[in-house]
Length: 153
Image (cartoon, rainbow, N blue to C red; front, side, top):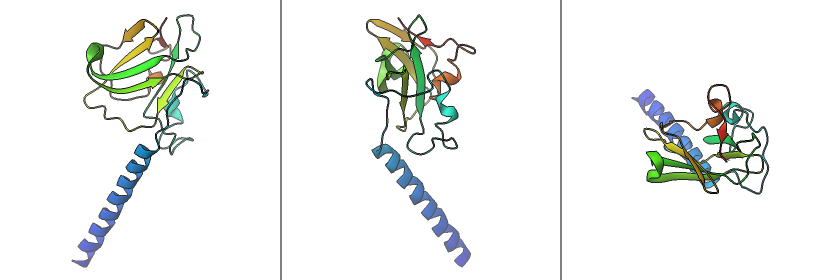
């Protein structure tokens, strides 16, 4: 019985610590800003900004990528929207803006549910992704090799 209580107390402690970390992340949201510059445009952000990467901690991006114009130059001040329905239907879950390096990112915990539908907006141009995705590492696919980079005019 003592062993059971000991194991239960360990489990409870781990659970409490895990919840504390979630609350810490939710209270310390870091996101791309249009007037700031980041680094490594076009690279897979989550190769470093992940739980095991060099930038683990508050700079663990849940969503990240790079936006370009149709000439291939990084695009500042583009808007990235994540919807729970196709073609900007349903609920807007998250809205991000690309920085001076064309990068967008957040460490906010996102509930991807059964998938979200990204929308890329710049001035009057709108591009929608027609398939739902369940992860936020945009450059892991949109890298010019697997899929075209994220481009909008």
